[in-house]
Amino acid sequence: MKTARTRPVRVIATLALTVMAFGGCDDDDDDDDNDEKAAATEAVKRISQDAPTSLPANVPDEVLRVTLGGVEYNLRELLSRPPESRPSAHIVAAYQTVSTPADPPPFGTRDVAVLPDSTREAPAAQVYECRQNASDFAWAFLQPEAGLQPITDETIPALEKLVLDHFRYPAGIDFGPPTGTPPVGPAWRVSAPLLDEGSPTAGQTLFIGSVEATVANGPGNVPLLRLANVARIDRGLPSEVFSRTPSDGTQTGYVLRLNTAGGITPTTGCDGTSDMGKRKRVPYAADYYFIDVFTTP
Image (tube, rainbow, N blue to C red; front, side):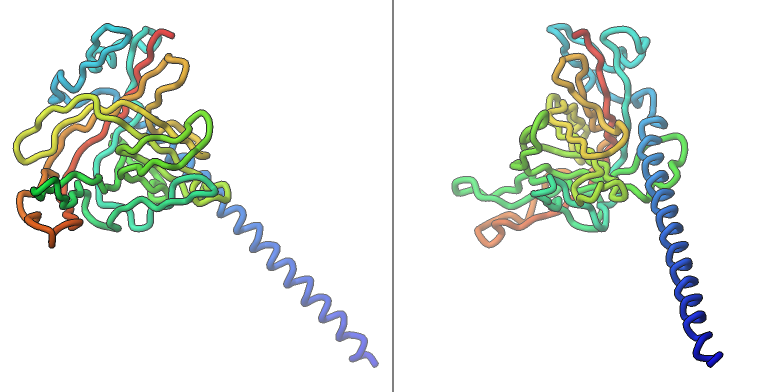
């Protein structure tokens, strides 16, 4: 009888210990998850906080000339002005190309999730496609494929918790106001999958640009560029990592492609119908500086 009475007690005690053990694991998992999110958030903030404060010395004036309100300015001179003056400029962030990410998250909305068309874990490249124009066959530029590494003086802790990439935005996704449906264009992105708010396409910021100025940089390198911000899409990312152009006209966003090497159009391999649709990745390197110009409303 004593044995019969003690068995339920042991079972209850065992269950209680099991619940406590699993409860402790849940708490530990939650703490670890919160720590991971905090680290990712801090890494995002550090990209901007530790960004360069000046441009490289070798940037030609043709890339730096911008027109604001009918008046021409030089971005380098605007960067030297006091922050409270108008117009003035500020480097929001800078990046250099690295190999493409192994597993980039999709972009889009909760209803439309699209993976960027890129080659995984490959060197940064300008991608060309063989196309026919009348009776001629030639390589046409298709898209960039690159990962990004922040240019900073200090190492950014937990940077591996972010995914940074550069690709061609395909358009056709309606993000709703104020963004709407951005046009096709070169896009740069910083993603924090840990901060996805339950959606694979949240926790990221995209900058989509349009070329304003092109300057040759030697026969073997893609040109230097100045691009203007045509769309900035923020989906739950808690910090500024790209410049922007707001609707009230008080700010204009630019990105400069500098220090380019390689990436030029191929000269062989696109000769006839059998080559149609063939793609070729031409390795390249570049630095991208994102600049806000503050203007008078």
